[in-house]
Length: 330
Image (cartoon, rainbow, N blue to C red; front, side, top):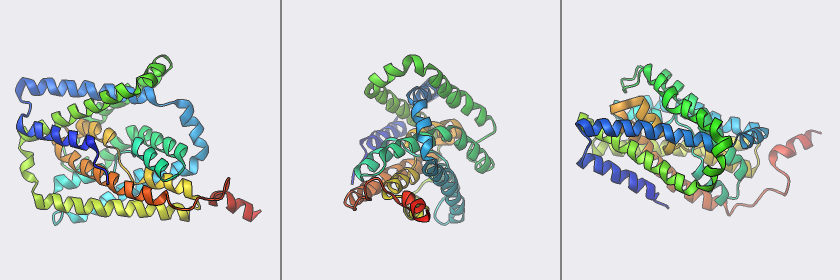
């Protein structure tokens, strides 16, 4: 079961912030650099997303609606249901972070990788992850406004304006600029990927530095972390089961169900961390902790599932459950 090296970098960044948090002028510089990094990150997201690929993917709309429903409807409902676990298993701040986790979009890279490993519908996974990321730029802040606005997590109505300025505007600018810089972005994908990850590390350092200065880490104990891990394990298990057996109930074929399971049960660390920084401010460190733990957990569990799915028998060529049903009716 893989340990994501990037998680180790994130944990190292958290440790650096714990030992040497940014204070005073340093904190102001780090905050300004973090804001610029987030804007540039979403500009690159916009420049990378191919409008033609997105439109082509609309032909498989049932699958994409299913994934979006899992990501932005089922997940948040389970997050709301977890409110009953406060204060026995979770503190209020950890619950707010767990609820925020359920609101962020799905992953793209790991969903594609696991779908390919399991011999699923890779093009569908690509489009589903891209749609989820695109919808999440609007849906996640709106859901946060509705569900976290009165939760005392540092969220305010002004955060919507910040989201528009720091996330949506750069994303749209990237889409507009794609016709001129799309080739450059594609040719330097690896180098720009390092810029992505470096930007997120900066966001994490800034958020956890603010948390250390505010002293909010005294609210977390090993027992509470254990409770959080247990709750997240149940959450992941429920979503993996719902996406797989729900896909069967909706009469999707094996390859489509694999794409639905991996795209519909996972949450994006890359999208969630910058959003949390904008939405929660000084409280972002506790808000992103559940997401960081869930991200590693989903990688480990999905790697095992993908290897098992790779041994499953394939559907008959050019035939799937969704195609057999109309034929039978005819």
